[in-house]
Length: 402
Ligand SMILES: Cc1cc2nc3c(=O)[nH]c(=O)nc-3n(C[C@H](O)[C@H](O)[C@H](O)COP(=O)(O)OP(=O)(O)OC[C@H]3O[C@@H](n4cnc5c(N)ncnc54)[C@H](O)[C@@H]3O)c2cc1C
Image (cartoon, rainbow, N blue to C red):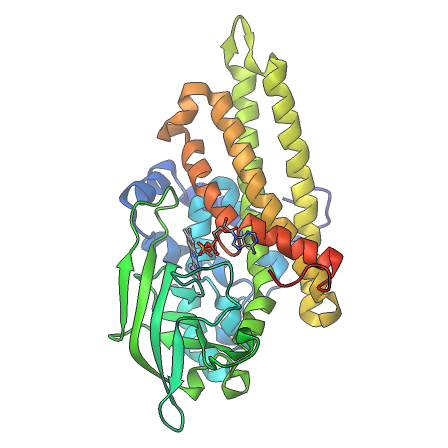
């Protein structure tokens, strides 16, 4: 990743260590096994955590490595180059939303949840989507927290498509705390909740791909929480939507990063095969139809890497200076939109180059293709990303809230 961009010696060490680890541990038998059985890779997840890869960007005080986001993305990219769906399950899914706690949580929330997460003892979830819709979270949410005592709240409602819904120990849950707020998103809060008897989960089976990452519907029935469980404490009451929006660019760049990394490897596989396989007495790479598609994807991969680099750098600035937030939001949506589309295009190309072999599991690219479709849907569909980009360019007066 980022050949041509200057990496520090330490960043090179991190990149090389991540690459070596993934090449050694993400064996074809393992990755296909997790996917075929539809099980979360607990053993491998713990190993990744023990090596500190998942906590590179988390504070040392709470078990993290204390590096910046850049180092984390570098590692995500290297893992995803070896097997993108598994990198997604472990490096993204297992700690989905951890930065919300690290960036906005109270000292107690960080001290309680970050160390066991960094050690790989538990996994987490972040719950925003509801059966009535995931794109429009600015409406009055059906999942409600109602105050029942001086400090106590009861949460009722259902969230759906929740990554790790069956196995999470702690979750960020976006709920409506003030149903009369106008606009409604000013009455939303995030609670940091622990899994327990008031929470029921129903696994969602039959996913098109990415089966090593469990997905569930999660129902809350009179879950008792307190003011202290609001992410960042009582001062963040009714500010959940804003915290969510501030965190989203970071997470959307992760999706884009996975997409570009997957594309780079799919392209490499396609190139190698096109140089070896023969038809009609010549190498199939010599057929212009395939050669041009290879060239087109190669250009897009290079562009993707440049966009990724910029999106990360501007995000780092935005985290220090809110003046960069709008630019960061735009670049993150571009990254997510572009990376997802490119992953699909590159995997499709690789399947075509492999011919019949591309359609069977042994060659992995059909599994990657099925996984890549997910990148277009989660954390805002491709339509939502275009809405965000257009709004950043044209202004909120022209492009109203979608
Ligand atoms: C495998 C998987 C894992 C997931 N993990 C999580 C998770 O851990 N946590 C979580 O909270 N959610 C999760 N999701 C949910 C995901 O974020 C939502 O599916 C996504 O946001 C879309 O919401 P929806 O499915 O309700 O579609 P809808 O919002 O109903 O949208 C349906 C269609 O309408 C289009 N549309 C909607 N509004 C607009 C508009 N304004 N302009 C243009 N087009 C529009 C959409 O683009 C889409 O094509 C996951 C989903 C999947 C598939």
